[in-house]
Length: 102
Image (cartoon, rainbow, N blue to C red; front, side, top):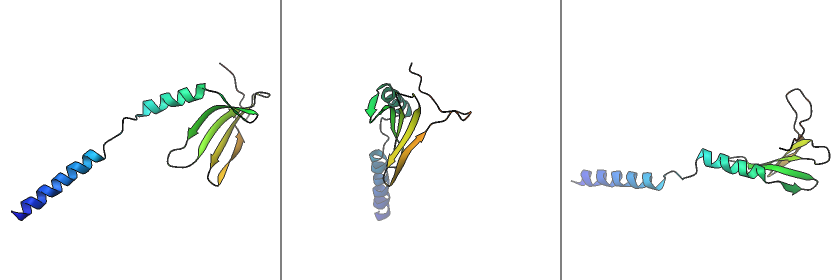
């Protein structure tokens, strides 16, 4: 009789833990649509204009995609704990990537 009680207790505990660790309603398509919305909003970042701001999962790093309104050259800027900095974005042929407004 005691073995049955212990077995029932273990099963109940497993079921409760399964319900407590359920999935959230956040799906991949929800996050992609939020990224698209973020890209449409332009912000000022010093002399640059921010096109997108994304957090890199499982880290404290944030990536900004920027462009210089004078030269239209696109930049990426990484910002995180003890790391970060700007870098120019290049095309596949090695030329500077230029921002082309829609």
